[in-house]
Length: 295
Image 1: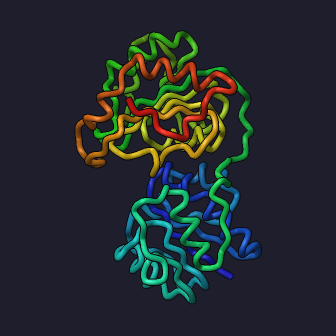
Image 2: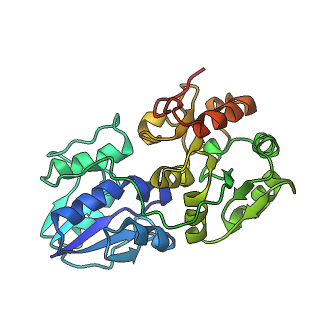
């Protein structure tokens, strides 16, 4: 049996789809499961342990795949994503539509598990963890980048957090974010602009992660690394950690996810709030922040 899954998005999108991918694997243990996703995610895809083959797919482009027995749309509600799979002429197509209407109020993890379950494929939304192989380092990872300006907390505030957290801080980013990383580190912290694999290992072995609503937050969830996640303009009820040693900061407002400037709600989060939350995330037995902190 040949299964084609479309999820041609980013790192956080991949990690929120892990329970659905593993549900497919359990339902079809002998199938060849191909995931259509960006090629740069290869190291993360390997760690999901549910995919046999990555089909490099940089967004909604024609898929180089023909006649899968089963095609699964974990990308969106269509019509473009649905049509991209339909033209491969699958034996069966699983997607949102008349049988499974799209719901805007669901957490991203629950959305895809629900889609599969309503097509007869059991999925466990708590099956998010990746296998942990890195050594614990005690590092504090600060990741200031995000895909859009709306989710980027100001550089000077991240810099103040780095100064307060001391010598164990590592500021991370992609090579394209070298200037941002240097500005936040300000010569007081180590920096890391390495591969995706090195970033995954760094977060897996870290003592704490501080970041915005971005892929690194989902990496922290996947490895159970304590984190402080700054939300705005999207509610953590949609994309936040589902439990565990995580603290969410959110001021209860939503806005334009694709805006170029920091969301007004994100700007209401202060340096003092972030530093207070780091202590809570590292304190065993502290209240879990699967809920949002709204002040």
